[in-house]
Image 1: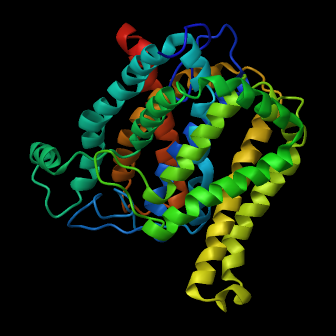
Image 2: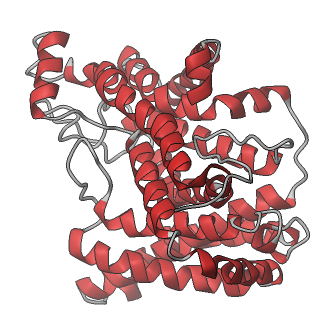
Length: 401
């Protein structure tokens, strides 16, 4: 059962073995990774950040919370939070079908278990305890690292940012198994996808309605902040949204992403400035419209509905805006960006260790929040980059990352 091995591999944590790389997708994936690092670097300095001295990272808005705050980080952090993980799943899904056709179902799943499963386990039992001890040191229950590690082993390890890796592995395996009985319909799906080349607006509307359909019921059921338990963590209201965008990436990538919606000469790429403007407009509508008097006159349910629809609109608009930008602008090779692209998966894997300990280093010092963020972010980028570069010199690690 499954596919014959005939075509290329994937990205989103998986290296592609094609003879030529597409810089637009590589650089988009790297930019999203840097946005993740920036996102976690500023969480200690948002105005709403709260630290629980009894439970530390288990019950706090961020593992390390500083007394120095900057309201701008509320705005910037929320912009990332609305869309960037959905787009990460979309980019990851682009290369799944070609990888399935190359490796076959069993080979594909074996490859994903090695390249996603093993790093996730390493992060879970090694990297996250080291990272989160920076938070536990600040709690009232700190009795040393060994006691902390034993507590984790008993209570359950904390996944942290690597939650994305296990969810991606889950989606990869489900897609590999689900596509077997649907294989005869794939040519028809590919033909449909190719017709989207000149239909960016219809594609946008379709993505908006599909995103609303999968997101709103889960949001109403679980609320915006509930997470499924550790160690296999995922935000419950968004798991359907992530699955949808992974599936969209799977379909767009099936015939090759250089055609169809993401074609460089397609409607989306050609009008990238307009899509970036729509991205900014949609997000600012999400920020400002719920504060209007006319919205406050609505019932609590009505206010929540307005916010939720604007949230979905901003998510889809930002995804389309970034895709349009990176497909529409000609990317020139840069050695540092190429190097960082090669290291992006590893940087995502290890960055939380550096984020939390650098935040811990400058905790509560009389320095402006903006400068602390720059110190943490730039230090995290540099240390993560150097660490992964060193790790890639090890043959076994190089084949995984």
